[in-house]
Image 1 (cartoon, rainbow, N blue to C red):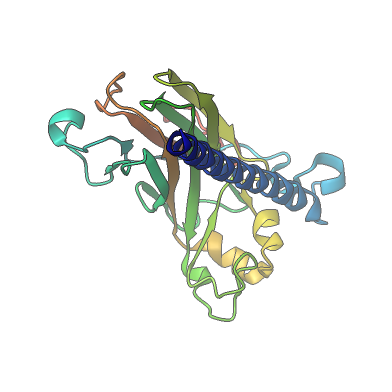
Image 2: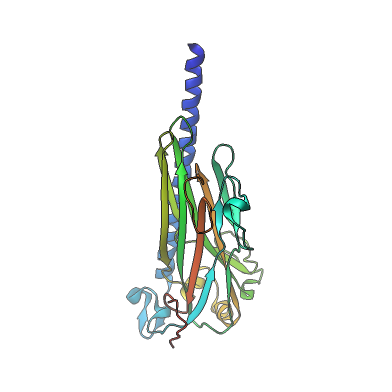
Length: 291
């Protein structure tokens, strides 16, 4: 009887530790979301510039006020797949920007980032005041608890972009988010992250298919770059030189199952990030240009 009590205590303690870890991950994700929204709001209100007689206090973002749109193109990421085996016979062949990761024996996928899995290069002098991006996110997954005890199923998806420009090569330019030189690039989030966390009874499962859009607030505008501490001369150089924007995806999960569902890539958890770029406003899928 004593052995049974000790065993049960260990199981309960293990469940409490796992639950605490999952809650910690969720809280960290919530803090990151709040910080991203706060940074967007701060960038929006920092500008004191006046354009066409309006200021940030008037319209929020004067760099785009009264301007027309110029469509700049589309960048699509590769697939990020979570699958128990990552066997090509199950998930299909992987493209050069596709990635697959398998959970460990406890059903856990640690925080993993895949950088530069999609990209677009905007020619120099294509833009004079702002690059506006709108992200179309697709996240499809199935949670399944194969254990005899209740477990917390969780999945987290965070897209980000890296702006690459030779204007940021100067070692004297310091990235305020890291305290280190930009070294030619700057990475930022805020493009539609997704986190799901759910307590699941034994053998419980849940399927979700999510497709949603996240638009910039101020875009990669002069106001945005000025908030990073960049001078007008550096900002002018960013727009005069080619700019490459790379797409990144960060994921983690617990108890994601692949046997109960399919996606277009035949995988268990698939995330795809698609960006549409315009000089000022959200892009359409046509090739029409407005000036």
